Length: 552
Image (cartoon, helix red, strand yellow):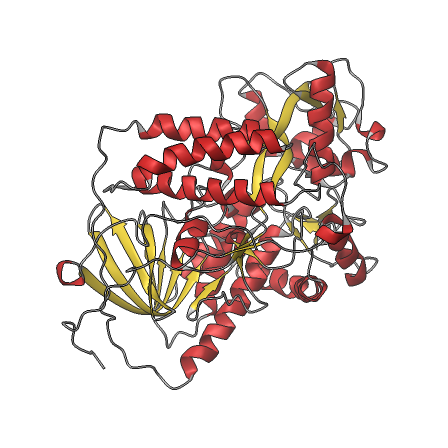
């Protein structure tokens, strides 16, 4: 067990239920990506479901997924091969039973998406399959060439909007989970129209996605700030493996521009990686060359950049059929054209960027967390599927499977004897405002730069200690202050998550998967274990009163 990070208070904001609006639902789903909406769609229509999204419902990590969904659909492919590939990528930390369950459920979930109107790419009427790094067989279904997430989310959002029992609150920030007597009772939710309100629920699903925005270089959209990890930690849920952040090897690197993911499927179709001198270097590092697992490719790129003293390497597709490549990857082709680059001809500058949070809230096969009445699904979780490194295109799959299983378990939970419907009498004191005017954007940018330098692809004890000391310094005046809008709460969440990641990375004195310690470069068998994190109890975190009447 890692030494816990002590928080100054349980809730980010002060509240008194007598002053706030109250909303009631059977199931509260926090997050509108593939995991959250699949969970919402799985709840029987006899129960009310409220989905709360931080931005527009179409804006999620899921929608930005390019590559596709892994599943055994080819008769020449086998479940055992997909399982073996997943276990190999996970570097000894996967739960084999979870891997087996999810891999075997993949064809069912893909067929379900097709039935809901998802238009996957086809060849001669059959769903097209491609290969990505770490896979031994072509098994990745994809859509719109390189915009699978967008097409999948289009179909899922469309279906969600037909459900009469399902409401979606967009642009609504979840500040904290509400807990009392060890159970989750809902959440404190804020938006500009309503302000803060209390949403009471018989079951809550956390599906808030990832945390790539903790790093200066990332493929993730602006919303991916680890809010779900932080609210779960404050609520007392167990998290684990927070040292494992996956860095995608190929992010378009144009100085001064936003970073853009260049899907692994490019290498699956035969792209080479070359250094500034034109040398194809991946065969020097791994027998699978460009199709090695992501952690190996990212480390190789970083090493080669250092050797050549160059800020990036290059993705080369010039030896492939140019028309095929432009048609296969239309979104990437158009993106590159905006920088006067032709993917069929030119060398495309790339470097790694933070991509996927492997660690997260500990869940079982049904998405249950360590807190009763709280489920979780998708990137916010640590389910046992990914181990120490996620295999390409297993992420959307995990969200679909665990979202569906969480919904099935919630349906069983709601079908039992109903608990008395009463509003728990919980309140929290308001923290003081910041002592001085804080430049939140400056702190956020500094945090992201620090995490990239010291807690990025390679780490060591000295750098981690420096990062911990600096984050502690920011925490002393940011976490003790009260804010009244998402900018402040988001920064507080990012600082908490940074502290947890640094603590876990410091604790794991070995290199495994996406966690590379230059001072402990070997993978050590005795470290083939999870590192759990649980917040210690806070005195006075729930103030009991007797003023609120029972609504049963």
